[in-house]
Amino acid sequence: MSKSDGITFELKSGPFQNNGASPWYTSFQLGTPTQELKINIDIGTNITWVTSTLCSPDSCTHFGGGRFDWKTSSTFEFTDCLQRPFSFGPWGTMQVETGSDIITLPQSSTFRANMFFSADYGGDQFSQLDWDGGIGLPCSSAFVEGRSTFLYHELIKQELVDKTMPFVSFYTDQTTSTGTCQMGGYDETKIDGLGLFLPWYLYAEYSGVEYIWSSVMNSFKVGDVTIEPTLPITPKHPMMIALDTGASQFKGDDKLMNDTLAQIKALGTPDITMEFEHGVITIGPDIYNVLIEEGPDKGKTLPQFTGLSLNQLALVGSVLLDHCYAIYRYDVIECPLTTFSLSPNGVYLFNKPGGPKIISGNTPPPTATQPFKGHFKLGRSAKRPLGEKQ
Image (cartoon, rainbow, N blue to C red; front, side):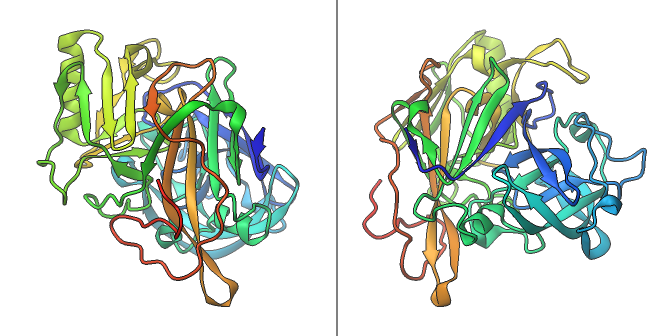
């Protein structure tokens, strides 16, 4: 039985490529008449963007292959036609212009959204993208890029999603290359037993990526060997994990990633164990060793760990998320004059029925919540709404 209906986006998977980006995307309708694009629903960014015909013919080449033709949409409007760079942190940078157009949702509701239209990008990481753009779902309204519409906020504002069900859940099935992203609810039939709750905690070691869904990780082990990050672990510099639906592999702290690869080479097929306050995640070589299906490394099976100079962080996407059910939870913060903001609560992870038992924890599925009344101070560690306990 589903907890609320909300809006469900059907997901499809492209081939797994060794560029650190998720293979998952949804078919997305933009403009008038609508143009169909492959769009990743990306927990790991704070913008909505699409590849567009602002790109020259020899630029913005990518595996997904689609471009939004702004000239053929009668509802397209520029909001700023000055090209400027937008950075995805260490992963890469693209040139963009800003504009707006009409988004048509799966239930045929429409609204106008501001977004970035790419005008130039290049490099292997982009050329191997299975999708044409991304819908960013940052952890908080506080971290939204101001020239881009926060889709989930807009869905609540237009009452297309119930604000007492502030959940975004992801389910993927590698055997069928299909999945779902449910905004405004989750599906209890996709949950096997108790799970692991990861309370949100601000990642502040690298400026500009505060929007990620990050949480404190107590330890990271390869086999029986504890792997340490670049900086000594202290209350001010904890080791952290971030769950990113726009990513594929583990990436982040250079020492953490490189030492992990060295231990895998030395030990052969060790399990990797990540310990948290509320439970444990354990993955084996059948999960972190992945067959590369397209791109320069096609045909190789490679361990998915890459350093990105993100100190103290292990960011991971589909390599882990394909093997569990993830529910991201916001807090709805009421403001004066009937406005509201969204703040991060945390992420629930559950084993899937019939799937591997990689999640060990004591957390039941979340329940509906009343919007938090009153003001909210977004500090380094997020508070819970009154009456909530985790």
